[in-house]
Length: 274
Image (cartoon, rainbow, N blue to C red; front, side):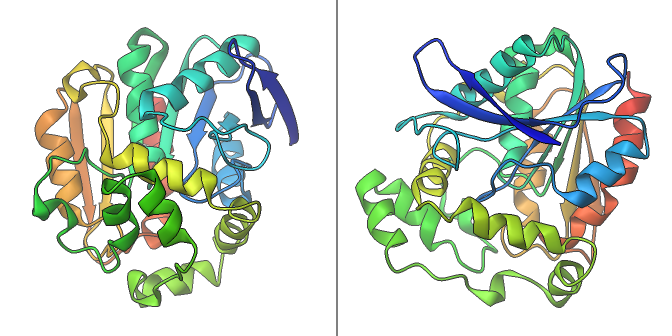
C-alpha cells in the first residue's frame, strides 16, 4: 500500500491510500475514525483482501498529509473522497466507516447514491439534534461539548485533553491488545502533527452535516456495540429512524473498538447487496 497525493480544485493537498491489485476488483472505500491517519490498517486490509476487495482510504482535511479546511462539513470531506475516486477511475463501490467515519460513509450515499452499492457504519454518530440526550451514555463527551461552543473553544480544550480510559470497555482493551492493535498506533500517528484534524472532525459532527439522512438511498447496515461508551447505542437507533433503507445489528457485549471485530461479516453483507 502506497500513499498518494491529490490537489483539489481549490488548491488543497489531499493524501490517500490505495491497496491496488486487480483493476477489475470490487472497491471498498474506507472512512477512518477520529483521530487517524487514513492509512489502511492491517485488520481492514486483511478483511478486504480475503474477499477480493481493493481498498481506497482518504485522509480527511487537517490530518497528516491533507491540508486543513476550517469550517468543513461532513459533505465537504466526502466531496474530497469522490474527487479521489474520480482520479483513480473508480465509478462504483461499497463504503464503510468506523466511528467518525460513519457519517462520511453515509454522506457518499447522499452525494452520489448511483455510485454506492452498499454502506456500512460501525459505531457511527448520528446528527446532533440539539438535545442533551445526544450525549447520553458517553463516558467522556467533553470534546464534543467544547465543539458546540465553537472552534476556539475546541482548540482550547485540545491543549489539556487526555484520553479517558473509562471510554473503553475491558473488551475494547482486549481487542486493542490483539488483532486491532494497529488502530491504537494509527490514532497516535493521526494526532502527531497537532489537533487540527480532530478538532475539525468534532466541529463537523456537531454542526449541520451538509446532507439529509433521507437522501441516503443505498442500502445501509448500522452496526452498534451495546456496551459502547464513546458512541452509545442511541445514536444507531436515531440513524435507523431517519434512514430510508437501513437495518441495525446490535452486538450487546461489544464496545466502541471491539465491535470492529465483525468487519468481515459486514463486508460479506455489503458485497451481497451488489
